[in-house]
Image (cartoon, rainbow, N blue to C red; front, side, top):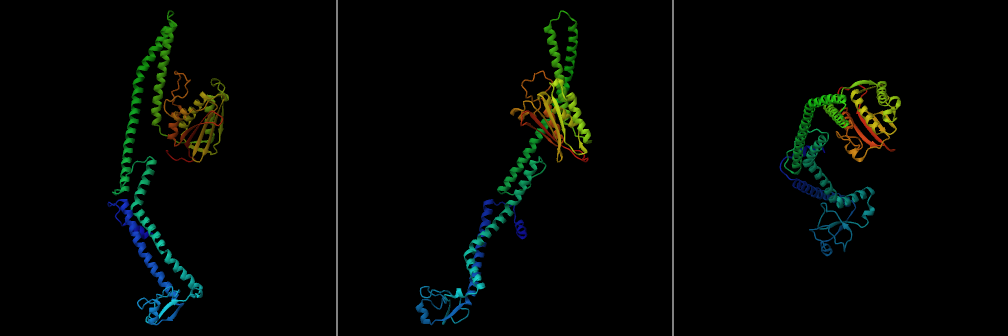
Amino acid sequence: MDRIKKWVHQIPGKTFLPLPAAFVICGMAALLLALSLTRATIWFSQKNKQEIAGSYAEVVPVEQEQQMQLGFSIADPGLVPSTELPQKEAPAQSGRDENAIVYILSPDAEVMMQEEDRVKYEFYENLDNTAAILWYSLCLCLASLIFYLWKMKKPLHVLNQAARKISDNDLDFKIDYSSRDELGRLCQAFESMRQELVQNNRKTWDSVEERKRLNAAFAHDMRTPLTVLQGHTDLLLDTLADEKDVGPEILSSVRAISSQVARMNSYMDTMSALRRLEEYEPCLKALSSESLAELLEDTAASLFPGGKAAAAGGIKAAVRFEVRETETWMDREAFTQIYENLLSNAARYARESICIRLCREQDFLILEVSDDGRGFTEKDLQNAFAPYYRGERSRPASSSHFGLGLYICSLLAGKLGGGIQLANGENGGAKVTVRIVSYQKNPGKI
């Protein structure tokens, strides 16, 4: 096999030879080789059969006149008509007097053969019948192997490696296969596709960077007029509050303006916070299991004092801590922000209870937050991670929530080497599962 590969690699693979032509060449070579091997095999088996039969042959004296009467001549010794002598053909005369005798195999010769000779004779007999099928099959398999090694192995390997790198979002490579056959053109098309992906990624990256710059400029430029408006509305409210002849409609309108200005300021703050989160770099620190458990309990207690939150309609929060390691390396700040956002979302939708669970699966920490609310709709499951998506139609427009909670969780979970999944519980309610990479030893930066 190694010799075949070495010989095939010496064949010029980059010359212009279409795949059908290469396949035909390999096939014709296989047929010619099979034909030669078949003829050689038949000659070899016939020779060995004659040697075996010769040891059991009878020497039959036949005069020349009898030979003429029996229908064979000196030129074809040993050829006996089956109608006159139904015995099997005898081997060649092996140097005996062709004018006087012929060799024929007696009718009971096969019965008289020894077992070893019988097996050999039957083997060569079968070899006569199967030589063509055997050699043609083997040569076609050999031709297919040579065709694969010659024309298909390298381009298929190149395409497989390229597809694997593209699936890993690695476009920093080049497909180097310049054959002019069909697979060569396929590799060139794949290389063109890779270059287009690189260009599209650059355009997307430039677009994202431009959006970040635009958001930053917008937030900065809007800050000054909003501050002025906020100051004037506050002054106007203070002034109108002292005026007795001011109607309640005017005072209500000014308060509405002040509320909307405050909401716009809050929106600008969220845009600035998002920009900082998109550029956030994880910072891993050691955290003991006791500290991690306290973090879960204290954060839940801050939202649900005493296990209940009067403002939230008496919602109960249950924490299940199932991490057994004594120490975990993780980004505490990012994890806390994810946890707080999930609890805030659950508190808005839960009816009576929220269940919090933290466990480990291999190299991941799994945080599950579930509630007994109405759960997610199909539209929510598709769009919940989009920024500024607000799934609840009943939420008032003046709400301070801008639909960024799950987007922030998804963004931070990705930066921590994990992800986030949404689902509906078996008994109703929503269930959010966050996976983040955690280590038992200091790994450095993710």
